[in-house]
Image 1 (tube, one colour):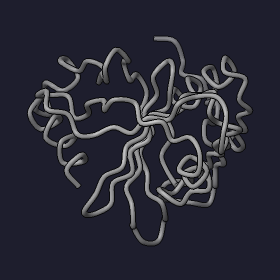
Image 2: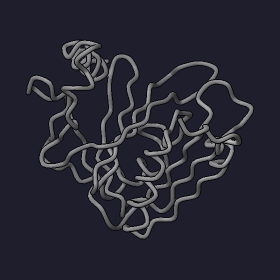
Image 3: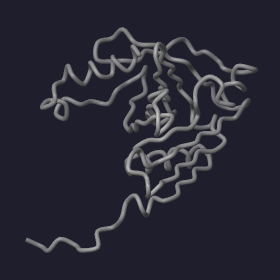
Image 4: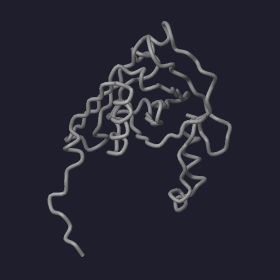
Length: 190
């Protein structure tokens, strides 16, 4: 999985102690990816490693499975709906995300390839329009799985909510109150 190895190497190059101080948003072309989440296509056995990366204009979806990686830039307006469901009984990857993509219509879905710029694991290919039968197959999940289990931090969920609202895309989030319980006992002032 060359793309995933590139992500790993970028983090290792920064070093554990320096990672936070030197961390800058990953950029692809002119888009900064400011929120991310990771997961797997299954909880019980791994077939693919999944990354969801958010920019202000699109969701970048990375699916890594040996020997190939697949990366797509999906504009928010290309989605018909997205749902996030929290399973309070799951100890590992408690969130389940499902994406529905319009088989035709708004938003050009673009494929990406590994980049050649040091520190930037992704580079943009000239736009590959997935219109027609290829986009329909992609929307049915024939290219890559469009659902998976993951760890979706609250900031990721809130950013996704804002961006889908702006694009007019329905987003359903269930179980957030269980995932983010309010503190029952406030800290006493010091």
